[in-house]
Amino acid sequence: MPADVAAQARKLFKVTMRESNAPLSQGEMIVALEGYDAVMPTLGDAFSAEVFVKARPRAVMLANFGVGYNHIDVAAANAKGLIVSNTPGAVTDATADTAMTLMLMSARRAGEGERMVRAGQWAGWHPTQMLGLHLTGKTVGIVGMGRIGQAIARRCHFGFGMKVAYFTRSPKDLEFEAVPYDDLSKLAAAVDVLVLAVPGGAETRHLIDADVLAAMPRHAHLINIARGDVVDEDALIAALQGGFIGGAGLDVYAQEPHVPTALKALENVVLLPHLGTAALEVRSDMGLMALRNLRAVLIDGQDAPNAV
Image (cartoon, rainbow, N blue to C red; front, side):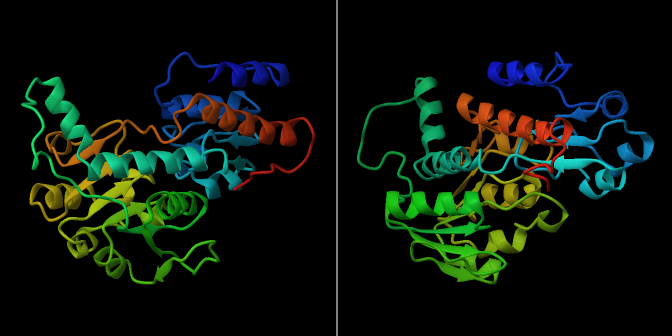
């Protein structure tokens, strides 16, 4: 944990801090549920229904360190009397910034160019070297127009003069012009960049499949800052290998930290190690928000402000 989060936690509670950043094993999760009043898990800690079946929890709360909580079976947790909370809001701008980073890196071939320079293969500037996609004035399609989706859309619209289209369950009242689509493939066909900003979980698994990828124009780029399994990775690899889309920028993967060898071998994809919220002040805000949820329940006897 960031130092200020650890210090605040120790002011409020008797804290056990793990030395390892590896995900909790199932056995460790059961021990945590049975030995502590609350647990602050992160996205690698898969609190599945099976874990709750096997455990006899003393814990009354899982205060998730992060906004996404598809690694926790919330229904199973609730059935065992546990409250689950998350950290919305704290991650919005940082995640939107990462989406823009990936958009620019992918469209302008920045990762490929840096590898060229580091390998000593750059022969100098010339008029047709490494031509990429100019983002200004293009159309961005955003899948999921929640807090993060809207933050990305604002950056695209006001910062790059991009036209905005989006796919969501219901049209949003936005501060700028944006075209809603109720058909994902039609959205994919109409944009230059398709950005994924939906929650993870069973409802969105493989939302971006071979059909959606096939609908994208050949020059278009796919950006994923949502969850890895929102995309069918095999279908994406095939689309990139075949040149059926222009490129991709990924911050998340289906089986983190495993990244398919086929993806790593491709030049037309930018690969980041889940950096979406990786700024000290953001991670501190996330941890402190999780602690406010814990304090509300365990100390003040109130409802968790960010219960899910």
